Image 1 (cartoon, rainbow, N blue to C red):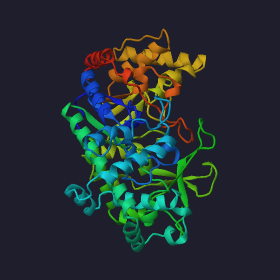
Image 2 (cartoon, helix red, strand yellow):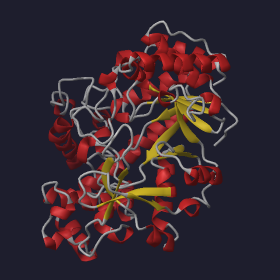
Image 3 (cartoon, rainbow, N blue to C red):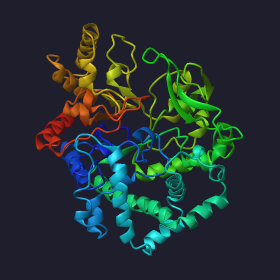
Length: 499
C-alpha cells in the first residue's frame, strides 16, 4: 500500500447502488459507478463486507464468514448467459421504494428467480465441477442447506440429531439434499464470476476496492456450528461470554452485540491458521482490507452470556501483535474507533497499519481531540463519517445551538490550518466544507460516504449500531444522483488537494 500518494474515494456499499430490481447488484449500474469514479478522479471504492445478510439484515451478522451475498447477483447478466428470460424477473415485486431495500421482498421473490436460473445451468460445466471439487463455498452451502431444512432457524434451535455437528452428518446432508446444496454452491460460483469481472474493470480504470472484514462472527453461523472449538463455548456449545461495548455517555447500558468470543489460546496454538486463511481470502476480493473492531485484537470486552445489557462485563487481553507479526506488509486499514488505550495505540505502531479519523467526532472544542486533522498524521484514512454514523447533514441538524457553534468554530480553525475555504453560512455549506477538509487534511487516504457528497440527511443513514430497524442497511442511491456535473466538482476538489 503506497502511502506516499494522496488518494480519494467514496464509501458506497454494493447494496446501495441504483438498480430496478430491489437492491444494488454487480451488474450495469456497478460498472456505471466505476465510470463515475474514474471521471471524478476517485481512486478508491469502499464497499463494506460482501457477506450474505441474516439477522437484522447486517453484513456483519452473516451465516458464514465466506458466504457471499447472492442478492447481488445480477439478473440481466443471467439473462445474457441464457439462464433467465426477461419475463421471469421484470415484473417481480421487490418493493415499491426505489431508495430503500425491502429485504423481506428479496427473500420472498429473488431466491426463487435464482433457483430458476440454476435449473437451467449446466452442472457439468468443467469450471463449476472444479469449483465444487475444490470445496469453494462448501461450508456455506452445507449450512444454508441445513437452514432451509430447518426453516431458516439458527442451528442452536435444531433437533439434537442435527444440532450437534459431525462429518457424517455433513456428508449425509450433502448427498440427501444435493439440489439445495449445489444451488448454494452455484450462487457462490456465479458471484465469483460477476464480482471478479467488476473488480478487474475497476482496477483497469485505476480504482482500488476497499472491503471490510468483520472481526466477530454471528452465533448463527457455520463457523460457530462446525468449528465450535474456536469459541468460548461450554460442553453444550452455548457461549460462556459474548461481545459488546461497555457503557458510555452515548449508551448507558453499553452495546450488547451478542457475538460469540474466540478462544484466542486455541487460535494461537494453531498458529492462527483459520484467521490467516480468512485474511488471505479477503485480500483476493479486496485490494485493501479494513479490519472491523481492530481494537478487539488488543483487548476485547466480554459480557456473560444471558445478560440483557452490557453493563456487567470486563476487558480481556487479546492476542495482540502475535496475530499480525507476519502481516505488516499487507494492505490493511485498522478500524480503531471507540475506546482507545495504550494497548491499541501500541498495536497500531507495531503493525504500521493506518487507523481511521472521523471528522464527525472531531469538532467538540477539545484541542487534543485525535480526530482533528491537526492531530492526525499522513498514515491514516480520513472520513467525514462511517457506515455507522449519521450523515453530516442529519448530524448537524440534531446539534443544539452551543454544539453547532463549537462545531463551526473548530471547523473554521482547522480549515485555516490546511488552506481549505470555510463557509458556514448554512448546513449545506458546512457539510460541503467538512468534505473539503477531509480531502485537504494530512491523511494519505480520504473517503467520503456518498450521503455526504449528495447532501442526504438522516433518512439516508445506513446503520444505527445496536438497533434493529427496517431502515438499517436499506439506503439506496438513484441513477440520477451520479451526474457529470457532480463528477466534475469532485474531480476539481481532488485536483485542488492533490488527490
